Image 1: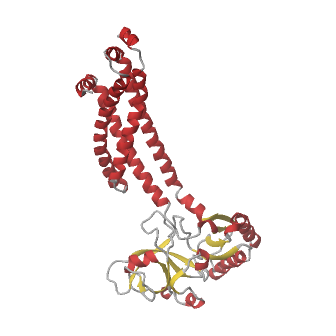
Image 2: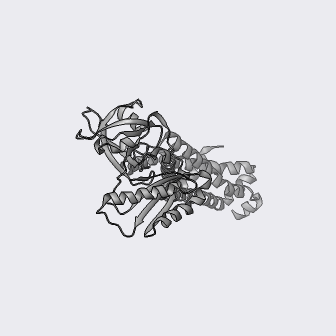
Image 3: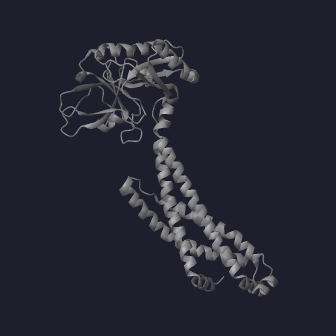
Length: 402
């Protein structure tokens, strides 16, 4: 097949060619970046927590009548709730805490190795009782768990149980048992007594998503009217626990509101905006590809209708149906390829702009290459039906139409 007549035909309708090529370019640039953002959001959404999310309940208790004047009485009431829950059939362990893993809101402090002159590192932490490890279903890989004596120490001397990611970030190793960390002023000194493998922080979308420290404490925000309890239950009784837990707590004391949900539900709530973003980006990508396919098919269909006489002449001179189809596919291939070439440039330019504005990760070459190939194939398929329609026109009818 000679390319000269094809190129001349395209140049006679250069406006149409430019518009379709531009549509293909913009589609590639936007779709590839949408897919890149979708993959990043999904990667963050699927980060492992190291916790049995389906069988740990986060319980928010909000009393109607709250008196903060007696902190000891406040905390006595809260730990009484824990004892009530531990008597509920199916509850394995429970503890009052200051924050809920994966919730998007928690507590953090600055800590650094003793005698280290640099800045402190952000340290997400959870305040727990003696059963903290059991509630979170965490196994020690080194060191020991909390004992009652740890809770009697002053706040600035209480020992810590840390996870491996935090230890390796702070010390460059997980051999941290017996090491001491301090805050920025150097006044607080906390010895690391235990190491667990993996545990998510309260901020699953942050840079410290996989770093967490457990702090022993029985006095947790006594000035706050609401408080959190974490309870791990029998995995086979999760559905029953969603009813038993609030019933038991309300039977113990009625003048309050109780909200109950698993950590799996907490994760879902935290990532609800990310889920909507993924759905929106997916819809945009699909819509753009669909519109581009319609544009390519429309252009080919219009060309077929416009050149019925030319097709008839070629058929009368011996051109086969396959050659007619090939002519239109080659024309579309040229236009699509030009559009894809510009689209690759646009894609990287858009990715750079998004990276500067919203910290979107860099495009990978395979993403752009796969997007270009996929769009090229889709473009060819879009032009196939009208090309086949043109090839089916009988030569005599086409000649009369000319």
